[in-house]
Image (cartoon, rainbow, N blue to C red):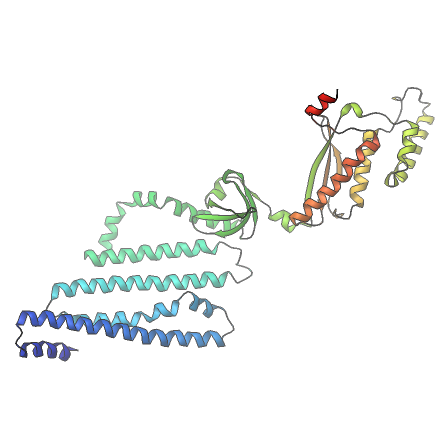
Length: 415
């Protein structure tokens, strides 16, 4: 290379060119030759490495090398050779221009740092993609940890780059940087909080990718699709995306539906509100009428016998219905609700089934269904719940009960 640089210089002088112009033109021609050579060697090395990796991925059973190719790791590695060639060649081309030679040395070193960061980034992305294919890790916030490593890598790379550009030793640069630590902490506040939150979320297993969460403060209600250093992305059921700060998962309250998803059923908890004025003791004729309802026949027969025996033994005066033991229409209806739920095909019989009475309200008396559907899928769950309450609402009049409903304008017109 040294002979080539002198040969062009001497040839130009032989052609009658001045020494100054010969130096500049010599440098320019050598730069052009070097650039073309670097492009050529980069193309050749890249083709060799990429093709080699391509053959390896075809014959390999693991997916790791596939992710290496997908994240362009071989292409980035191929750029190392041209940078080394340029670094070794610069002294010969710019031997007569020491100031420019120092600048180019710094440019090449900084570009080398950037290339090294590109390689680190592609390797980290490869590790991230590979970990997401592993069953034990695919629902963990891998993105957060990869971003932390990437931030540290870029921070170290930037420090080295500034040290090269300014000519200041690294330890002195770090000392000067320490005085600005408060500003740095303020600038990277969200990043630091997000990193700490990611660790706590992972250790405490608070949220996984794929979990259904409800976060009312941020209007999120859907599946977690991504957890990274600064944000958690939730795809709502209307297909919109809500972005939540990662640290909000440990500072605010949210609901994770994973427990329901992993359980054997999905809870149904809804009440019927009945008019209290429609509640009354049942007469013998009403009891006989209700015995025609198949689910109630065994219960009413047994209960009626017990009540009659009790009232006879205690010589209860039944001319007044309130005396002694009696059946009420709401009590029989509550029993009917319980029997109906226990016989419904969509209700999980292995989990709690209960029809319970709640405290009276200004609207009426609530009778609540507390049970679990055996199908947790949203559409089927809604169908089962609607099917249960369609029947119960239609059954209310058979017990001479009335459901509460605020009057509409038509009610007043009819009167």
